[in-house]
Length: 174
Image (cartoon, rainbow, N blue to C red; front, top):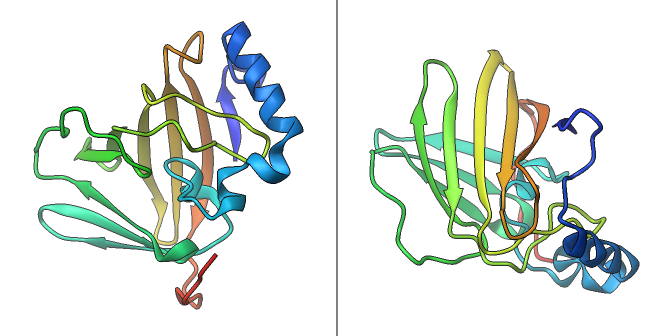
């Protein structure tokens, strides 16, 4: 996956946040929350190199992840975000806009990173995801990050996710 907006591929950090990202990068071996077995959060868990499975009910989408046997619940029943909620995976609310499922994720804590390079966010992060089917075994994943405490403007990543038909979700403990 790659940053598609802005076009230069650079995360639009505020100057003081850029300094924190550089410090995170220097200390990444010990400081990366994933290296300490913490939950990666959204969007990072979506592009880690571990399989996940999606289940759909009339009220929600559920994703189960091999990484630390974690899960994600995306409410699709029109319910509102939980006020003043803060968690590792955030609070996900989705709606169908034609074929794409559009998910707004709020309620993040500030303890997760986007990647192993120290790219980070605050608890004010809002992620808007788009899951667009491209064929029976492929979907485009797009995530736009907004965090006025850390970034000068929203930025977007995009990648294709391929169905892995013969890849079971196994027990994994960090």
